[in-house]
Image 1 (cartoon, rainbow, N blue to C red):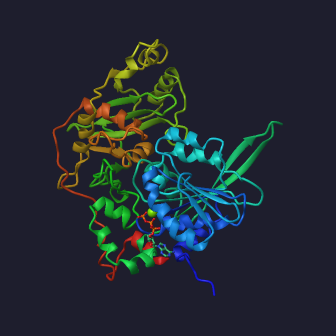
Image 2: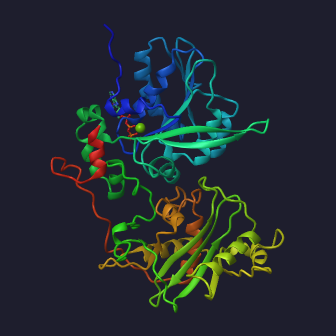
Image 3: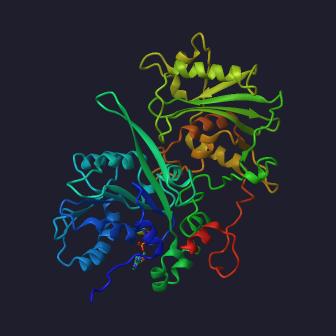
Length: 482
Ligand SMILES: Nc1ncnc2c1ncn2[C@@H]1O[C@H](COP(=O)(O)OP(=O)(O)OP(=O)(O)O)[C@@H](O)[C@H]1O
Ligand SMILES: [Mg+2]
């Protein structure tokens, strides 16, 4: 009688039954993600040409996965051999499963010329979009008869939080396929449309009964974490996570009209006497950002409109030259009823005045026929960041000093996901999509305010240890449904 070495738990089985090209699994700690990924890699090891690659961001992080593979792989295939120096399992058929890392984006070059039928990313939010998307080019068959696909697991948080959330979490409810069309021009000049499917399968620790049987106290460990980490790691919330810079951020549609305890609000008619300003951060291959702001009698700032030069691929710019951008700013200011006929002063990243490599960006924008002028902004980073905190802070009545119209989608998308830098621990990580943050920072430094403390915080989620009581928590409900 054969002995079962490893069998999927119900939620792991749902992950393993997906047919989509890309599937992301997880979203909370301890759900059995890494185990499921290791098991999934075994699916085709009976085929001699099969090549799989399991990636973690750094090599030391891989050691736990490799240790676990020694349990699962060795017991399932006693004749399989692990080569320590090559970080590779070789199976009796000739199939191979490699472990790899990609600490820096340039390390992707190590995979150039290689091909893998199955590519798996453990902890996907530790990777950038450039690193993940490069591996699409490495995902092709190594011989006949294999299935070619990508799988990933993750917790919320980390440098890739934003793009992973945009790609898998925000567009549709969990377990709903997302299908994208891609047009390809053939050498004969024909356009063929290819389809690619991806899906998110959520899991939380409640889906990992084996772990909870072995260590029921693990739940308490997660519950003991600071609020943001607890919400992310226990409940799988994508709205708060470890390392988030603006933990005070609140986007609450219930208060879009009364403006209480929310940073995002519905647009309203700007009183004629309020001052209007615009701010600018230039980018060419990276996005550029233009924001328009209204400032009321008390110095409260409202971001009322934005023009963001992004292709739709995370952090990729539209390669517009400064003259074109100036023309579009002029058109917007002539057409938009909130801006038309207003005196608008502009403030921008001081580097746009740099003339060392020819005519400056500022000079190009100021030329006829556009006449878009800028003053150099204050680019001191930490004081600028503190201005966000002071303005985001809510007083006892739920009032703050900065709000954004809900039409400013890119601000709302990119500001809450900013994370701290590992080296400059007080500052934000500049490898992220931080162009709107910078643009807004120049504006806020034009109107610095005194420190304000945050007196109100977001609604607390239900206590996880109070599981027997009735709870309205979606994440918890989801975790227990599997
Ligand atoms: N199908 C299974 N059969 C037996 N044990 C399992 C199974 N799935 C998970 N486990 C146990 O649960 C533990 C935690 O699972 P795993 O490491 O896969 O979780 P994770 O979601 O990757 O956690 P983290 O969020 O910490 O990365 C494993 O070490 C293993 O002991
Ligand atoms: Mg794991």
